[in-house]
Length: 240
Image (cartoon, rainbow, N blue to C red):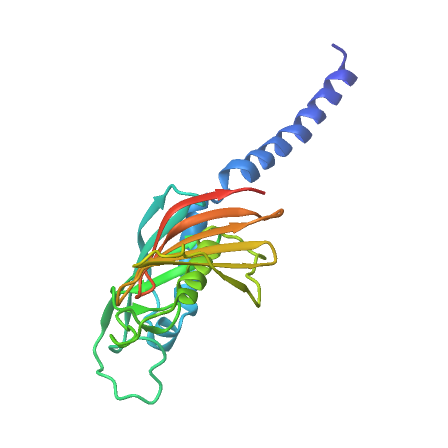
């Protein structure tokens, strides 16, 4: 091998190896995994939330656990601890506060890079800024429309169906068989949506909801909604 050829090969090696090192660093060394991204999203949400923003103590926030719920789409439940200078939750401007360092434990659920739930100390809903045990008065009975809308909202948020929205108006049809006592069923349709809501005729019914959406973003969802708005999913199938 002559001197000129050796020099050319040496230059090529010098040029290629940094490029390979840079590729390895970009593709592996600093790549952020999905669970790490979920932790970052959870921490960013809490730092910007009213509770920590009001009197959170810098340097005390720490992610202590991440659970991965392998359903579709994958849900990340991130447990975070932090301290505040006073008791209470949210923006407490103008309130008389106990000046005592208060530790908090937050459980933040992240679905497709979006926070869908954030509960502090199992008492405070940081996402909606209200106590978690706030309920409607016991004499209020929610209508089938409540079951329909709650189920639709749950399906869209839980499964990350961004850009999909329910109709602004519905056509309602009574599907209750004639002569059937103790059971009712209504059907709501509009803009490719068909939602069937059925329930036992009792004082505080739990609604069984079946949702069908046709088209590119089509899906089928089945589940129940009780009077407290608690949703139980039984089936979800994407059709698009």
